[in-house]
Image 1 (cartoon, rainbow, N blue to C red):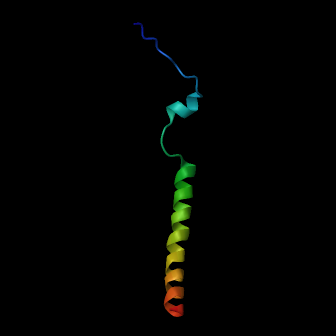
Image 2: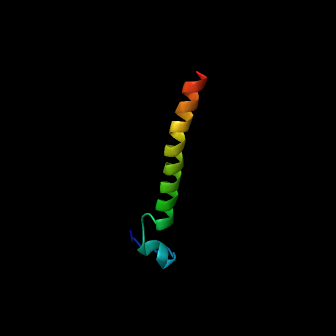
Image 3: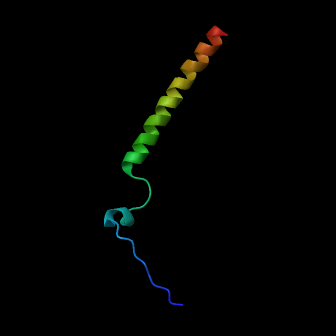
Length: 50
C-alpha cells in the first residue's frame, strides 16, 4: 500500500509564529486587572449587606 504526503495550504504567518500574541497578553492582563480590582468592592459590599 502506498502512502502519499498531503500538504495543507495555509498562510505562512500562521505557521511561523505560533503561541500568544501581544494582543492576547494585553487582553488577559486587562481582564485580570478588572477582576482583581472588583473583588474587594464585591467583598466589601457583601460584608456590609450581610
